[in-house]
Length: 172
Image (cartoon, rainbow, N blue to C red; front, top):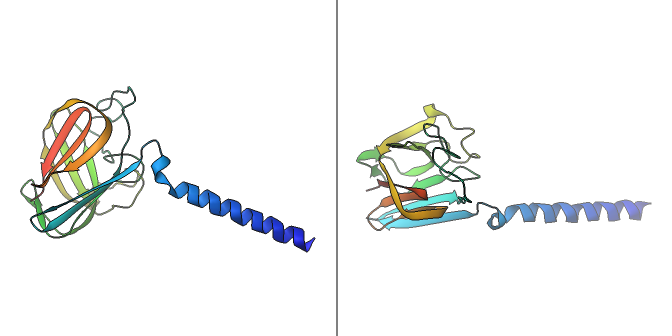
């Protein structure tokens, strides 16, 4: 009887360990994780996000409503980290790690840097935790971008592209 209990406990432990390790492999998610990093003028900029796919859906104004806070990706909240004080679209942002949220609009997007960087989606987003908001104009992407993509160029221009929309903001 004691041997059976020990064997059962051992089997349950193995099952739990397997389940936990399977959950940690985020690359198998429908919206896999990605990270981009670039050094600009001695400042390291890193953005960690997940990449949802279009899959035939209307994205902005459809899946993602205009005028509502978006997590800027999928799954966990997207975060951005800057290693030193910077200016985003000419406005100061202190070195640190921030949640990167956006409010999509047909004619204007709001880019939001928020104190809360480690949540799930935008469910825990609170406007009072915003550190900085800047407004930028969306543009048409070069063709249809199937998977949401964030890029940082050598000049510190950060580009968000998905479906037929591209939004760029500068970090100097």
